[in-house]
Length: 360
Image (cartoon, rainbow, N blue to C red; front, side, top):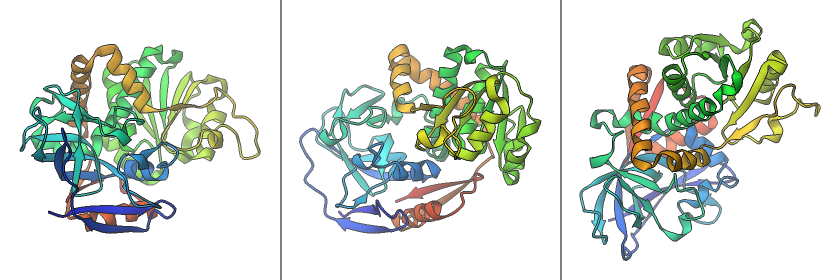
């Protein structure tokens, strides 16, 4: 058996190479996973861009100067030194852009386990959790591609809505979402439509994406960035997925004191999005970073793993119905395809109507 990995140069993300190596001996209590499939999305590019500041490079070791980009996907147990995990069972979770991964399952339940490998412990348990598909309420064998493409981003959208609803939406009448075509934004809009129907959902997007976003049916209104001035100035919450300081400044200027909360999602530096180019503070509330893993820990602490899982699963299945047909799934075989797709995403535009699945 050969273990293959894609190594990405940290200082030049379009420089990525395939590397083959023999497997290490499987440790005591460990399990070897053969990676069956994962998706490559803009989210994975974010993991690489923020690899050092958010420790995304630390999940899967690579040679000095290189990193392995984390992916979300499915894997099958091919070797097991753990009495609680059987060869042949399948799991879903955080995987390397690679052919195999060794994990050390701990806190094993019927629904999943945590990887207790030592170097992964400083990072959020959200990323170290693996679900066992045989008892996973989110799993649908016919929709595995959609789960890889949308699932992690949908969950962030779910947690944003849960947080805002818990704050009674800060008294807002409408939700303003930038980069409304992004998968996380679509997830947020879906959950808000179901759980907070009294809050109007307005999606901001590029002129070329207006038709795509309207076709999802998830927003009450879709507005091109250049037409922001026609959005009524009412008490509003903004959630910024675009990471564009100039756009965020336009939102703050337009709503001014009517903007009651400004959330930043993603890795863009808060400092770069809290002032105008000349250093003048933004009008309205100070933008606040929304870091999903911290909110996920709080959510599952409040509801418990089983009940929390059911709440997420119910919202997820509602979203699947709404998102059906909005993304054309492309499947590619082999890690060379993963390397090529990833470097293309780093260097160019990403079509929101395309979902890419890699089968190593």
